[in-house]
Image (tube, rainbow, N blue to C red; front, side):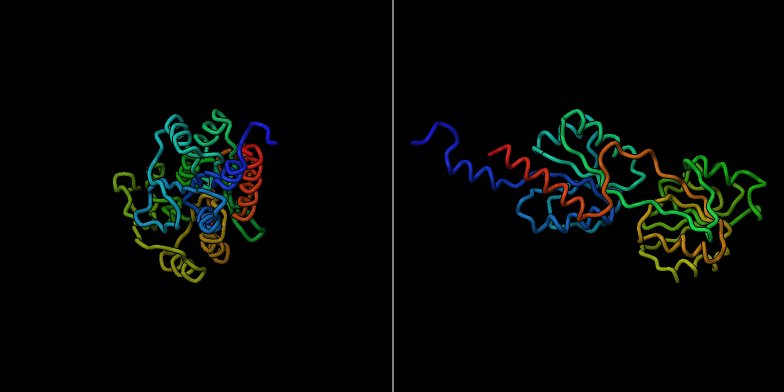
Length: 277
């Protein structure tokens, strides 16, 4: 004799329901996690992209392209789509999106994980000058006594959307490499634009630094392997690097690999399945 409650069929059905998750992406680590989730029937995963790249490589998953409309817009979307866990795998400098994700998940009591590659660390062979922000990096360049050569040739690798602060150091000549054309109104007055798509190897970076006789490199501390050759090349050629430090860390737990993120998702999926049963 059975007690009242869920039928056997409903228990089995609830146990096999895919676990709805969203990956806030745009990084190599996000793409790697999506490859794991593509073939995993335990998850109903959606990738969210900001839409800043014209032709992104898309996984075999549902993809949302474009912003959410702030914290409230993100909360609405998470609720409307029944999301049960969030992985923030955005760029280490996507501070606004990470803040919005942390706030929304706290308000909705949703588990949040930060998937973030480790930051680069200087060696004894590196000549780094730390800057807390883009503005501080530009201020360092504006210092007339800070560099051996003035005006200097500056390889600006902060991205096409982060050039405006360097208008405050206008005497230098800037080299900017970008996939998409930048906003010309935001460029420093003396800028050479190189349109190219990476990845760029060590030989590529050495060739560029030598060809343009670069005196200073400006970079965000993005971490990872994809853009590290420029740092290696600067080290080899003894070129100083203004290294922009990462924003304040996320309050969420942090892992460095897609495999660790998948294990975190599996723990929450298993716990959710047990609660549902």
